[in-house]
Amino acid sequence: MLTKLLIGGEWRAGSSAMPVLDPATGETIAEVAAGTPADALEACDAAAEAQKSWAATAPRVRAEVLRACWQNLVDHADELAELITREHGKPLADAKGEVAYAAEFFRWNSEEAVRLHGSISTAPGGANKIIVQHPPVGVVLVVTPWNFPAAMITRKVAPALAAGNAVVIKPAEDTPLTALRVAELLQQAGVPDGVINVVPTADAASWFEAAVDHHAVRMVSFTGSTETGRKLLRRSADRVLKVGMELGGNAPFIVFDDADIDAAVEGAMVAKMRHSAQTCTAANRFFVQARVADEFTTKLSAAMAAIKVGNGFAEGVDCGPMINAAAVSKIDGLVQAATAGGATSALGGSAVDGPGFFYQPTVLADVTAGSAITGTEIFGPVAPVISFTDTDDMIANANDTEMGLAAYVYTSDIGRGLAVSERLESGMVGLNRGAMSDPAAPFGGMKQSGLGREGASEGIYEFCETQYIAADW
Ligand code: SIN
Image (cartoon, rainbow, N blue to C red):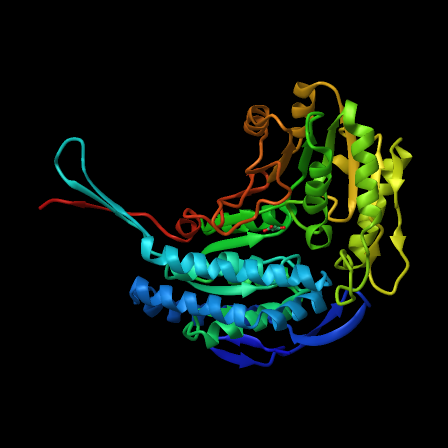
């Protein structure tokens, strides 16, 4: 297991170490070098130095390096998946899915690297030509979460590198092992020294505080909670840095009474439970039309009851542990407050005894819109069901949140589905689908769920400047 810092192509010991836990047992599985603010600054120096020559390579050269990165990640998929399950806890099958998803960002962006189009036009007055091109921003700070230890790194690093930037990565404290191994695989695939640096830390605030002021840093790309995103935004504003922010969600999952209820339950299980129910896109509030609310709740409870909770390495496990003890107590607090407020527990409703940090798959019926559990990102295997009769009221309730990342709509009337989708204040909508993540699609949120989009053809432009040259010839 790699446990050192990667700075300027060298693997360096840190001045102190931090433990990495297996959330399925609570035991320490590794001690990883804990980077200091000085390490973060050295990594920024190395990135600044390497970025110039990387940006000067031909797009085709960068494209081929990125393609080799995709191949190397795919070639090491089993090993990477084991590492993800070891430090995150998600079932091995989900971890394998994550590696394929993570690798795909490199293949997609290898194709985008040679299609970073600018434009040329004649000014309306005819006086000059307007040439527009997209140079890289420079050095990018990449700050990533623990829920997708590989994919949230590659979703940022692949387009950043495709555009000619260098990156300094601060992986989540809970999951640095995958980040370090991914970086090594990218190095082996031909990414030059210094273009990727990884500096895990146990003191994220001091790390960021130092790095954000480095003269070469021109962008902060973050995935994580809205609360932390706001802090990083405030601090980035001091240097007027470009930002990419993928923040929290509070996804409504809407089921109309003309929907195929079995298909809706199947989609609900994906939207709620993928990656052990710890995704920003997770269905957080189930709005179900009154006529089918009991049927949906009964069938959803049966599907949730069939979920096998346990160690992600064990055969047949569908849901691994929560990331830590604090996550379990936050989920439990929300569930207890909901039942105290009148919700009924159709299934589950409590934590699972340790070792490890597990929560029972839980379905809550008779939940009222506006209660704490519908206003908070649960990040756990809990499905609150709210019955509705009036579509306009339901849409108002679905939009009654500062979050706007993902939403889901199930109906057999595609016209109604599209009309409702358009009224949802959400960056992404799954229409008769329980998952929408795709490197070829723009991932991101409206309102306080974020700024910018990752993936698709616009993803690479987030890591670019726009330069206009007024030319007369
Ligand atoms: C996230 O939870 O932040 C990402 C989910 C995804 O990419 O599917």
